[in-house]
Image (cartoon, rainbow, N blue to C red; front, top):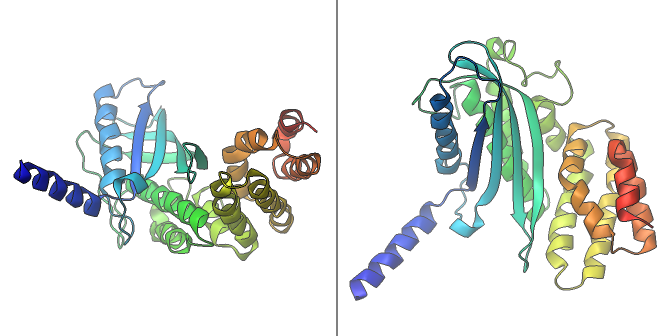
Length: 301
């Protein structure tokens, strides 16, 4: 019996030491598939999940319960050839809230500029020194963006090294590739992968990143202790977004924040004081004008 107990303890220790950073689930939708074998995407679904979950993205040690939960939905929008496709990639990461069963959405984003080639059973390989292929570079880029945002929520500007890794990926895409597949160049638009990581490393966005820490670590994580004081901290964090919106108007990261947090903010401030409600509504109407009526009606006064 002791041998079995020892074996279980050793196995658990082994898993703990080797647990990676991400716990990713993947779904691939193929609503417009015409010629490619659907089984190819079943294989790809598994390949992406294993790639994201088994790759060692940081130097840190993660216990299984500390892994960052991420949901990825890839929708194939166009077949360019038998094994080349265009796709939308939707990602959402979630973060546990301290001393609570609640999990808060942390990063929610849709990338409509994913072009890739894949043959069934093709291994997904990534190198930190050379370009491998567009799919693994896109996946690695978002792995670092998700990890960076998670670190920012636990320590001020803790995501810096991971955003730098994401920017390094952008810089390593060969010009011949970047000119033929969208998402990597600054000249395309201000909503692509280039600008998303540029935002996170921009001095103008620093108050936003401080707000991410305050909102989560000093706000949500403290709700169990004193909901009124925690919400007051969160209110100050949201108010600071007005400064970011003014110094860096139309930034993609502010839209990502609004897409991620709008429903949560509405639910939290339903119970807020009138002054808090008015302040949050005023800021969010400017940051997220397309949902202005949602904030007014949902939060109330």
